[in-house]
Image (cartoon, rainbow, N blue to C red):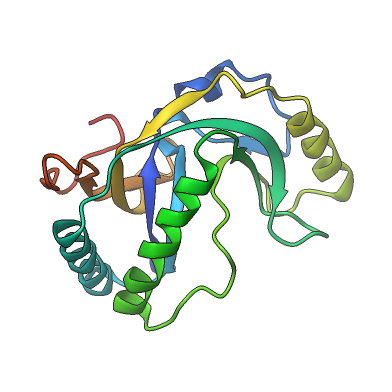
Length: 202
């Protein structure tokens, strides 16, 4: 078994994905519990490295608390290599600049604490809602693009009010990810931690 990946993300209430049109057979739509907005991907760094990054997050938010960000979703686009995209993700309409600015502030300290390197690309706030199967054909991927192009997510409005450390779920056929720990964004109330080991439906 490969080592599980870790990443930081803003959890979202993902029930809206159940109301979307059914995707093509080779496209796996995310379950409600798996929907999030990625802050930084750490890879298979291990729990100890992820905990170092979590401690850095605590220090940053303690010294400079951050307010929640209201967002709305926009167009759904392919993400990853152009010839074989790895995800279909909604970009942000409302709240994009503020979210990407916060990602830019936080991701390098977290990544450096866990894996000793920085992300070279500019922040791009996105919410993945589906992924193609690894063996999806070109035609199946094109069908996935057409499905994504037809989606209208402008009515999906949420608030980014937590940052969570995620890893792989213990029951991946049911859900892909689980929250290891989470921190509230609230400039007026500090950053009280949520209990370790909570699932998305906290």
